[in-house]
Amino acid sequence: MADKRVMTMKPRKIPQRKCVACQQMMGKKELIRVVKTPDDQILIDLTGKKSGRGAYLCGKQSCFKLAKKSKALDRALKHGVSAEIYDQLERDFVKVEDEFLAAKEAMDDDE
Ligand SMILES: [Zn+2]
Image (cartoon, rainbow, N blue to C red; front, side, top):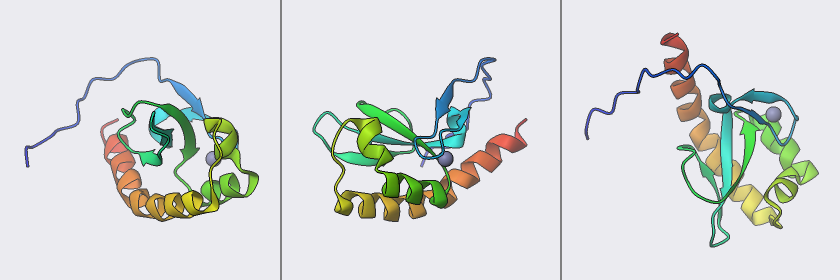
Protein backbone atom coordinates (compact mmCIF):
# COMPACT_ATOMS: atom_id res chain seq x y z
CA MET A 1 0.00 0.00 0.00
CA ALA A 2 1.31 3.39 -0.92
CA ASP A 3 1.66 5.92 1.81
CA LYS A 4 -1.27 8.10 0.98
CA ARG A 5 -0.89 11.21 3.06
CA VAL A 6 -3.76 13.55 3.44
CA MET A 7 -3.06 16.71 1.57
CA THR A 8 -2.67 19.69 3.82
CA MET A 9 -4.22 22.02 1.32
CA LYS A 10 -6.94 23.97 3.06
CA PRO A 11 -9.52 25.79 1.03
CA ARG A 12 -10.88 28.80 2.83
CA LYS A 13 -14.43 28.26 1.84
CA ILE A 14 -15.73 25.02 3.23
CA PRO A 15 -18.63 23.81 1.15
CA GLN A 16 -21.66 23.36 3.31
CA ARG A 17 -24.10 20.53 2.91
CA LYS A 18 -27.30 19.72 4.66
CA CYS A 19 -27.96 16.52 6.54
CA VAL A 20 -31.13 15.08 5.00
CA ALA A 21 -32.28 13.79 8.38
CA CYS A 22 -31.77 16.61 10.87
CA GLN A 23 -31.51 19.43 8.26
CA GLN A 24 -28.37 20.84 9.83
CA MET A 25 -25.89 22.57 7.58
CA MET A 26 -22.36 21.32 7.99
CA GLY A 27 -19.00 21.20 6.31
CA LYS A 28 -18.71 18.39 3.80
CA LYS A 29 -16.24 16.46 5.90
CA GLU A 30 -18.70 16.32 8.77
CA LEU A 31 -21.12 14.40 6.63
CA ILE A 32 -21.36 10.97 5.10
CA ARG A 33 -22.42 10.91 1.49
CA VAL A 34 -24.93 8.43 0.20
CA VAL A 35 -25.00 8.22 -3.55
CA LYS A 36 -27.37 6.85 -6.13
CA THR A 37 -25.16 5.71 -8.96
CA PRO A 38 -26.22 6.05 -12.61
CA ASP A 39 -27.15 2.36 -12.56
CA ASP A 40 -29.48 2.93 -9.59
CA GLN A 41 -27.38 1.42 -6.86
CA ILE A 42 -27.58 3.20 -3.56
CA LEU A 43 -24.47 3.10 -1.47
CA ILE A 44 -22.33 4.95 1.00
CA ASP A 45 -19.59 6.93 -0.63
CA LEU A 46 -16.86 7.80 1.83
CA THR A 47 -14.62 9.23 -0.87
CA GLY A 48 -17.30 11.66 -2.00
CA LYS A 49 -16.16 11.12 -5.55
CA LYS A 50 -18.65 8.68 -6.97
CA SER A 51 -20.86 10.06 -9.66
CA GLY A 52 -24.55 10.19 -9.21
CA ARG A 53 -27.03 12.04 -7.08
CA GLY A 54 -25.83 12.43 -3.53
CA ALA A 55 -27.50 12.87 -0.19
CA TYR A 56 -25.68 13.77 3.00
CA LEU A 57 -26.08 12.53 6.51
CA CYS A 58 -24.11 13.54 9.54
CA GLY A 59 -22.01 10.67 10.74
CA LYS A 60 -24.41 9.66 13.43
CA GLN A 61 -26.45 6.52 13.62
CA SER A 62 -29.29 8.46 15.13
CA CYS A 63 -29.50 10.53 11.98
CA PHE A 64 -29.46 7.45 9.84
CA LYS A 65 -32.35 6.02 11.81
CA LEU A 66 -34.20 9.27 11.45
CA ALA A 67 -33.63 9.25 7.70
CA LYS A 68 -34.90 5.72 7.54
CA LYS A 69 -38.00 6.56 9.51
CA SER A 70 -38.83 9.67 7.56
CA LYS A 71 -37.70 8.24 4.21
CA ALA A 72 -35.46 11.25 3.83
CA LEU A 73 -33.16 9.40 1.46
CA ASP A 74 -36.01 8.59 -0.89
CA ARG A 75 -36.74 12.26 -1.17
CA ALA A 76 -33.15 13.43 -1.37
CA LEU A 77 -32.22 10.88 -4.01
CA LYS A 78 -35.54 11.16 -5.82
CA HIS A 79 -35.67 7.42 -5.90
CA GLY A 80 -37.55 4.82 -3.93
CA VAL A 81 -35.30 3.26 -1.33
CA SER A 82 -36.54 -0.12 -0.18
CA ALA A 83 -36.36 -1.33 3.40
CA GLU A 84 -33.68 -3.82 2.37
CA ILE A 85 -31.54 -1.05 1.00
CA TYR A 86 -31.98 0.97 4.17
CA ASP A 87 -30.96 -2.10 6.17
CA GLN A 88 -27.93 -2.66 3.97
CA LEU A 89 -26.96 0.99 4.25
CA GLU A 90 -27.41 0.90 7.99
CA ARG A 91 -24.99 -2.02 8.25
CA ASP A 92 -22.52 -0.20 6.05
CA PHE A 93 -23.07 2.97 8.00
CA VAL A 94 -22.08 1.26 11.25
CA LYS A 95 -19.01 -0.16 9.51
CA VAL A 96 -17.85 3.12 8.07
CA GLU A 97 -18.69 5.14 11.15
CA ASP A 98 -15.42 4.26 12.89
CA GLU A 99 -13.42 4.92 9.80
CA PHE A 100 -15.27 8.16 9.27
CA LEU A 101 -14.76 9.36 12.84
CA ALA A 102 -11.09 8.38 12.77
CA ALA A 103 -10.56 10.32 9.57
CA LYS A 104 -12.35 13.29 11.06
CA GLU A 105 -10.20 13.18 14.17
CA ALA A 106 -7.07 13.00 12.07
CA MET A 107 -8.23 16.09 10.23
CA ASP A 108 -9.03 17.91 13.43
CA ASP A 109 -5.53 17.18 14.66
CA ASP A 110 -4.19 18.93 11.66
CA GLU A 111 -5.90 22.18 12.50
ZN1 LIG B 1 -28.03 14.80 10.84
